[in-house]
Length: 337
Image (cartoon, rainbow, N blue to C red; front, side, top):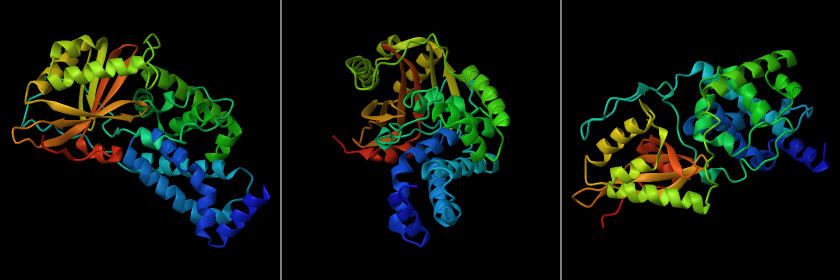
């Protein structure tokens, strides 16, 4: 162990909170993202992170330095998340408030109602971290809404193994120690998790999204904002792929294929005086705070829209409720104009 690290551990064990922060702060952001991947909820991930840090502070005397501080923290965080997944009910489905408008019949009812977006502002130093040689996914890909959504259908233990092995690249023996298991058991769980994940991930033939901040991304985002803010349904529909989808957790309504999404957008955009969109980013993807115009001039926030892009088109529009706006530094309402 490095002398400086050994000194910090010794001081932290003696109750030095500054030494403890020096040991753990470099890993806080990536641990928060890890908890988010496992739980799919920004709020649950924050709670799990706080529980992890408290457990680490209280359990530092038991740290034997057989693994790095980072690996030890991942062990604690993973098991805290597993406890959450196994013992706590997820965010329940929420009925649509149809006092303002009535939505068209959905294509189906969604089963994952607890999903929440993750602010890109918190991804700095969180996904640009070294991963093990056995990682199979790019860090940016593994924070996308499609990937996080697909993870949520896996059984808890398979979910943990897949993230630790294929996203973070920990070795099988390291994961076995984290989960108090054996290498053969971890390998079996990983194989089952890979099959389950591939059944839920988008078909590989989809064209990739343009690079974040690229001219191609800017162009499709500008077209979407212009169409949405002006209520131009026809222009909006031309931006959608044939297999476009729209979801709105915690409301379990899902709309699949372009015609269904078009009916949903028409119902929303034609029901009132329109919306103003404030750009932000979530899960490595373009997102917007949506604010409803009103005759009084006040513009209350109605939710957060996240776009899933495919080349120069939009494959998905995910709407989250307005409780997500503060996480992105967005106000509850915009001033009158």
